[in-house]
Image (tube, rainbow over all chains, first blue to last red; front, side):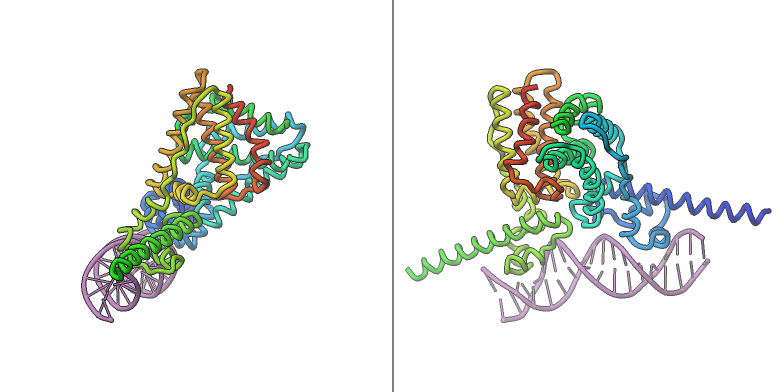
Length: 186
Length: 186
DNA sequence: GTCTATAAAGTGATAGAC
DNA sequence: GTCTATCACTTTATAGAC
């Protein structure tokens, strides 16, 4: 009985430490990118130590891969009007929240090849879905511009903190929404 | 006479070496960002050596500041229609060329605070000009979205090489141009 | 004037003490 | 199981040889 309790506690304890490390890693990778984030700094912020970080995650690369895994967007389909609606909903969410894992990948992608691949894969997947349902021979270009606009807005708001983009998601979407509709419906 | 010739040659030689170093630095900073670009690599690409690079430019920071200085855009003014026209012209140029200095600053801005300031200053300057000439109480937001769209397109094309953005500048602007007009004219 | 050799600092990773 | 001490390496920057 006592023994069983002690085991679960130990497992639970380890799980929590791993989570703390992962959270700290996401924050730091998101703030400073891959190269400037040190194992030492992650350990300190997680209230742990460098050796443990290495033991749990194997290497800085593997830790980054777990911390910066981008959650896949839901499927996008339907008429151009429905597509536009879904794009608006997805973008609104990205502007309102600060998806830590995605931000880490986004900041790192400009200097870290694997992060670039991660982001490109996520964007390409969505883009293909959109392009397939749009009509017109410029469907690919239009879906590309949709991706660029989305990327530009998310980066400008969360990473660059550009002037004028600190408005509420509603105010931003009141301006950006019609653009997405125009792009989707041609 | 001989002496004079020798002097100019030496000065000229130094100027050329400096230019070669600066060009190599721009390329490498643009390809890999600030941290992953080493003085050694710059010297090698420039056909020179690390000691000389340091001697000429003082430090890696100072070299970067010179290599990644963003040329200011021309003034933007007039009616909303004229603004839109100028924005389209400026963006067309940014998509057609690969402005090495600006790309270096753009790639580095996500990990290097001073590069971030450089880009932010350039973008804010243009944005203020645009916002001042637009009407409506959402002028600031609209000028912000103009900036985000511009940033997104340039980054997606030159840095991320996103699917669908490898089209000709004309094809891209056929899609993106109307968006800028919509944003400028309300 | 140009380049070689080295110093000083900081990194990821590892081995082994508790 | 957790953490301390250290290794091996790479970087910028400098000092001095040619």
